[in-house]
Image (tube, rainbow, N blue to C red):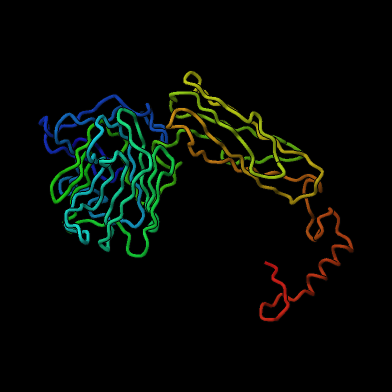
Length: 382
């Protein structure tokens, strides 16, 4: 066994041989010192040191509690961090062995998660109806730098992400788009894939944190894409008090250059003020969380008892891993105070804080309105 399965499902990766031709070796070069999503210490990556490196699952030998080799999911996510030191040829990060399952192309294996000859990230898979689908990044992959790559399928749309940003997507169209396999349930692989029933597409460089999931994850759920965290995700403030709430913003890894985060509210007119509206993280202060304060605006407008808004984040940096990174918004609830602590009383139809004849007249008028959709001239109250 070369790499353990941290999910507990019992699908470790094995190596064919310790000989130099096939060997991979543990290295301390990693993208981040901890796994951003989980906080676990990230000690090592794997590097190829042979001409034909490859790690593979072996269900017959490991007797997994959940057999990845027989898995044919409709929804799935594959993700990995990688650092390629070679800039040409097909280089597979993850593959699935197989042959003669795609209509019109017997040489095609069930899945390729790789860098292609154009130096673009690629996900190609064959679905259960025998159709193959390929998606390629618009971004060119450069040698000698880390990337996090993820691909998801929800059964309808195939998506490809680089460093947490959606780079390309493909509508899969009609058909059974569950991920296919060869009948004899062959291996999943790391560092290589398969072409025409032979091992191929050997990766040159470092691979780290490979994860395969049975659902189409969102970017903030990726292992290595929690680049910026915000806590809490929901705050409640009141126009009467307490009028403010604080949130902490933190980077999960050291940036190559300054990261500037601009903060804004979604509502017009504004329901809250934000202080500060710009946070800057540097290579020196990135480990220290920074605080922003969200304060309710105490206006004189009578509104609903609870208003809702969101606080969003725009990230800019010359570090391409952080620039444009998606950050989960803060949901904000603002409690109204114009009608006292209980806000509008039941029956206050005109929302003036009093129940009187005007409210009764509104009630009567709406009661008399015809809302039967089968009768001409009636109104739709929805």
